[in-house]
Amino acid sequence: MDKKELKEGRHVLKGLKKLEKIHPHKLITFLFLFGISLIYSYLLISVTIESIIGNDSGTNLQFPKFYIVASFLIIGALFVPVGLLQAFKTENLFQIRKKVFGLFLAGAIFLVFQGIGWLELIFQGFNLKSNYISTYLYLITGFHMVTVLIGNGAIAIYLYLTRNVYHDGVARLIFFTSPYEKTKLEIIHNYWVFVCISWIFIVTWLIFLL
Image (cartoon, rainbow, N blue to C red):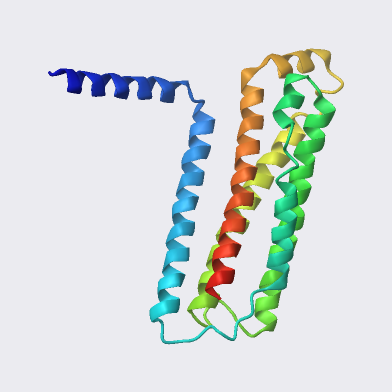
């Protein structure tokens, strides 16, 4: 084995050691979001190709206004988790639950706006099988709705499990001394940032396409 191969082997070992330090739940979340990103990419590239070579036209389709409203909401919601990890560091449980609940509320409102966006498409006369643009629009936004639902479900469970930490001194002590509790907040924070950025990217792409 020459020096170059030995050096490459050491880099691989260092990478594996770093990977071992990542919490399994954080790694699973990362892989899940990576998979969702691949689905978004495939659908966006597919609808772009279809718009270039497709025979049926989707030019009469107007981009739902409530998707634009949802975009403004999501941009504002990006600032909700700011300071979340700092609140854990300072053991400010009230701020932690307040910010996490804010994310849940923003997600719920966002889902309502997405649903109204679908209604706008229906009122325009476009369903899942009307043409390629409406089909892909339903699929892309549908996948994003599922992503938000999963995130909101996890947040609801988190809020439920931490509801008694206020009144239980032992539970509070365990909560703020557990590295896993910090990991949970990191997962929630990263997941929500992905939800926001992916939606902004999707809407920007589709607006330029339409």
